[in-house]
Structures are given as structure tokens and as C-alpha cells.
Length: 469
Image (cartoon, rainbow, N blue to C red; front, top):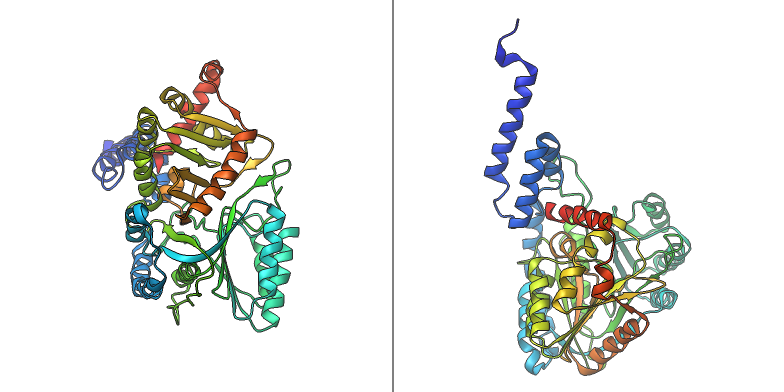
């Protein structure tokens, strides 16, 4: 009979306790209390499975080599920012917002921009293709989803035409967001001479990044003079059968495009290691829009978008309108919204009634009762998936970009947001938001309280998953 310490059951039992005790020493370090509690709970109940998941997705940080590349880009971003100083926006009371955003994202607020807001899906693709067809120097595209469907092939054909004219065409695509189409999209782009890179490719062992840390930005820059930022990918609007996406994108010309071009070039460098050869062109002033780019992600200090959002909700005086397809907030966001209502601020949350991700929707719904009890107005947008991501606070700030109001966008994704400070741009965002509100159904607290018990249990279960970030 083998010694007791060779007994496989005993060894397995002992190994589980080694994992549990090791988790107590390691997991609480540099993680939020909610995340630490979630991981410890999982590992104490399922030690080996929890250990494997923790190894795969337990650290929301970039490997050291990526951080070194990012730090090498700081002089490039600083040079870009300095080139925009002559076009600095005069913001008055909004100056502290711009100062914080520059501290967080390294890009200054500029005046002299022209801005169009486009919420026509096919119209946006037409406009983008027209700009690509007119390009003479460069086309740089950074996008989460690039499909090989009808919409994607139209853009691919335009990019191929630009290559034939001698234009430098670069496309960076997130391989996870585009996994359904990526192999063929990559082939079609390369056969047309387009330079292609994957954003945040997954390395299983050496220098790996969490597979769920994604580059979620949607930035299109043409000739360094025209930039697009918003929520729309390069894919058919109904790429999920029966679900039509409703988006919002800002097309800008003017000095702020230099920030957008620098960010796309920087992300290209992060994957290739090729330092940008020159600073982006800073276009001359064209109009009166005052705009600032706020990039956020794991390489940036704090959680940039979330930090600014929470602060500005606390500063709100009259109204806050948040439109987002995925709303999974942290305690800071929830507390800021509740405090705003308590001060007499009218807070509207617009979310989609159409569901494309059931687990996310269940988790999102688990917050509704608390929001309703606090006095937040929850508005359900019908018919289409409202994939647009935008917000307005009083008459001093509006934001259009790629960031959802969820923990994933706060902590895991690379995002890009345009901050709008001038009265005309803010009014146009608010007019679009009013259009959302006019067709939406307001969720009533008494009706929500009548949902079935099993639905509440599913919501609570889905909510637990959020803590594993």
C-alpha cells in the first residue's frame, strides 16, 4: 500500500487548499474589492477551474512590453499636443473639464473644428467611401468589426482604389470583434495592397494579453484632415439577423483630427514596434466647434472615461442624458447618478429594448430596481438596437464615442471619446437624444417590480459575472 502522502485523493485535496490559500495572498492585490470578492468566491468553490480562469482573464493589465512601447510614444503624443496649442479652445467654465481630460488622455481641446453628427447608418458608409475616394496621402482605419459582407466589401473596394492611386492605406482590426469574418476580410484587404494589422492579438503564453481586453475604438482618418469617431463598425447594419443597429458618429475636420491621427498611429506602433516617423498634420481652423479627443484604456492613468463621467455627473445642475447599449455601472457611477437626482437633477438613461446579448442584458437589468428607486428615468428605445454611445450634461458638455457605460469599457477596452464643448455641438447631440426619448417607453417602477422570480434570479446570477473583472 503506497504511503498516505502518495494517495491521489489526498494530493488533490491538498492542492485545492494550496490554491485557496495562494488566492488569499495574491488576488486582493491591485484589484477592486468587488473583483477580489468574486474571484475568491469562485476559487474557494472551484479551485482548479477558478485558477485556470484567473490565469486566462484574471489580470486587467497589459504585459510589460506593451507598457514600454506605450511609454516610448509619450514624446510623440506630446509633440502632437504642442502642435495644437495655437488652436487651443477658449472654454470658460468648461476649462477644468478639458484640463482633466488632457491629463487623462494627453490630448488638448482645440477650437476651429467643423463637426457633423451622422446617425444614418448607410449614409455614414457613403460619406466614408466618398472621403476615401478623395484621399491623396493616407487612409488610416482602426475598427472593432470589419466584415467581408456587402458593407465591408464596398469599403474594401474603395481602399483598394486608394492603394492604386498611391495612397498609404493602413487598416487595424480587432480580431476578436471580427472573428466571424476576419480571415476573409484580411485576405481581401491584403490582395488589394492594404497594410493590415491585428489589434491586441492573443498570445497564449509569452507576453500574452487577456483575450477579453480588446481595442474597441472606431476611428477613421483620411489625409490627416478628416476624422470619424463614434460607435459604428464596418459591417452590415443588420449583421445579426432581425437586429438593425442604430449608431451615432461624429465626422470632424480641423485641428482635433491631429489627435485622432496620432492615436491611430500610436495603436499601429503598439502592434508593429515601428515608431511613427513624423507627427500628424494639424489642419487649419475651419469652423467654431470646440472638440477634444479622450482616449482611454489599460495603458492610461486611472479609468479615463469613467473618471470624467463620474465627476461630471456630480457636477450636473439640471440634467444628465446617457444613451448606451450596455449599462453595467460600478458603484461610483451608481452613486453619482443617485446623488444627482437627490440634488434635483433630471437623469435620463436610454437603453435599447432590443436585446443582442442576453447575458449582458440580464446583468444590466439587475441594476434597474436601484436606479428606479433613486429616481433615475429609464427609457427603453424600441425597434432597433440603439448601439449609439453618447451623453450630455447640462449645456456644457456632450460626448460621442465608442465607450459604453459598463465595467468592460471602463477597465478592459481601448476606447475613444470626443468631448464637445461648444453650444451648437451640444445642442445637436441633445436634439438627437430627444429623438431617442420621444420614441422610447419609460420603465415604471411598479411594473418592473412585477417581473417573475426566476427572472430576478437570472439577473442576480448574471450580475455576479461582472465581479470577475
